[in-house]
Length: 270
Image (cartoon, rainbow, N blue to C red; front, side):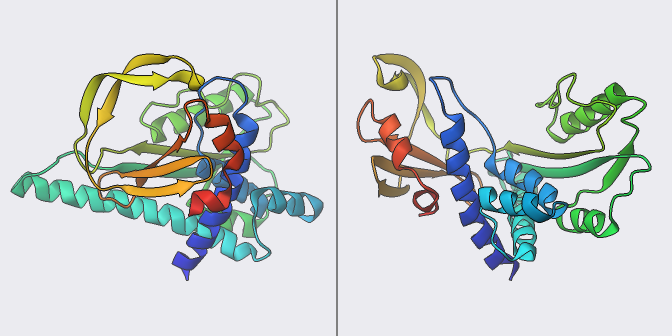
């Protein structure tokens, strides 16, 4: 079923997410990225690949041998997320009548293909990306106006993310030889399920060093909790409770590096 495919692909995506994180988390800078967005965009690319390229992509992304399961699984995850957002909007409508929070959970997973006018894209590929990923192809003329095409793509992404991502593609990336740009944009605005209080001077140890004072969020309640190698995992639900913030906390003040080394897709799925 679609739900079973989504569960399978979610576990595979967790493996890819952790491996990608461990490649990107170098140095002491903050890191923010969306593994689901990366997987979705590369899965569309995978749909149009063949031979050795396709095999290498499947290996890195942890896609199994059953390609339809990959695409249906990712579509299932996206459908679950969109369903949560729709449920939240319904709750807000009822809240106007009966009281309660008026802040909805907003999720938008948007896909689109931008292809060169006149290029012979194969019909089965375009059909799959449009039907499964909701990614129609929009034809542009990269050959005549690469900069115009870049501005159009960036404008589309900006609109899908409510002006949060203004320049996804920097100057110089698209040129006259570009034939296809696959884009995925994820927008999330998620209020907490329960109101959290503020602690104005909570201690925070940056990179395990001396504590600095920051504004913290505090609450006493029942939350998901799991002991994991090198630390603990705590889950804090967002509105509608179908989406959760997963917080990984090392056992030791300077134990983040050790926790990162122990983190696997299996641990994240558990």
